[in-house]
Amino acid sequence: MKTQSTEVAVIGAGPIGIELAVALKKEGIDYILFDKGQIANTISWFPSMMRFFSSADRIAISGVPIPRSDQSKCTKEEYLAYLRGIVLQFGLDIHNYENVKSVEPQKDGGFLLQTECFGSKRSYKAKKVVLATGGTDEPRFLDIPGEDMPHVSHYFDDPHKYFQRKLLVVGGKNSAVETALRCHHAGADVTLSYRGKQLKKKSVKYWLLPEFMGLAKRGEIRYLSDTVPKAITTGKVVLTKNNTGEDFEVEADFVLLLTGYKADMSIFKNAGVSLSEYGEAPEIDERTMESNIPGLYVAGTAVAGTQDSYKLFIENCHIHVDRILASITGKKPPDSEQPYEDLES
Image (cartoon, rainbow, N blue to C red; front, side):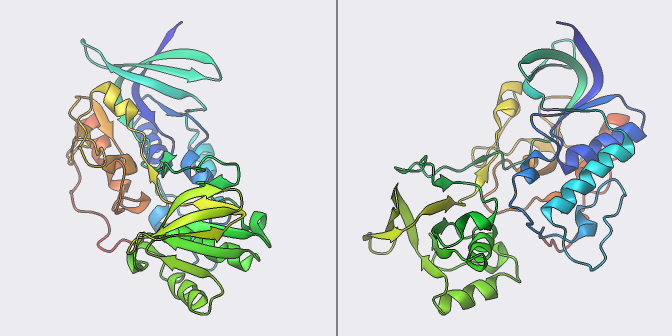
């Protein structure tokens, strides 16, 4: 097996990984950008026609604006098309569907990467490695009976599937509320179960919460706060009231468990990166984004590991690119101040 060499290996072809690849190419630095799936793999499983929290100018990358005729937020489909355009415009070298299985620091410096692409095993040497693997790789499972049944999912795709059927949505942040609204408007009989006593304004898009609460007050959407699912069976879900411990049943033809997602930090662990106990956030130098392993950097939302209260988004991760590029080229690092005082995400 022939080993290919490169100056920088970037793992994760999301928006920040792509932005870094553009910056490296502009500097004339040899790089390879890997992703175990297609570019923007995480965004690709967002719901159809989902709109971003952030304005288009805040999620644009590499100095290329996202044209908007009506100043509206980008949909998932529009943003994926934009990112494909960036890849084509800059002629980026992307190894998509090539899963990096391990990153091994070498005694004489640099790293050895072992990958797999459609069953073919490959090997690479890189002087520097950037982990931009994101923070929402897999669902947070509830570990309750019935969670693996075919009518249960941790991903919402299209509301049409639930037309004239009973749907239970579990969760209390933006994805759950937006799903409940979209499915209600598509003709589903919707119930939302949330473990908290009330929905938090900062966790739900400001234009969605008033509509949801209005529908809930009128009984058009069933809103069961302070409840958690205990077991799922065909056609029914057992919920528990947090304040009393009482169990009761809710009818449901389909169940969407939108309870959040967690980062896959296995490649960090295998490479020897120090991780925090809570959320497994990697230990980094914020001026350079370099980890405790010399030459291994972290970019994008992976910097926060698994986030409970989201603080890192596309819009405030652009500066990671500038910091890493400055470190690799030996230039003065940029100001540590965040680019936006008030986040929209």
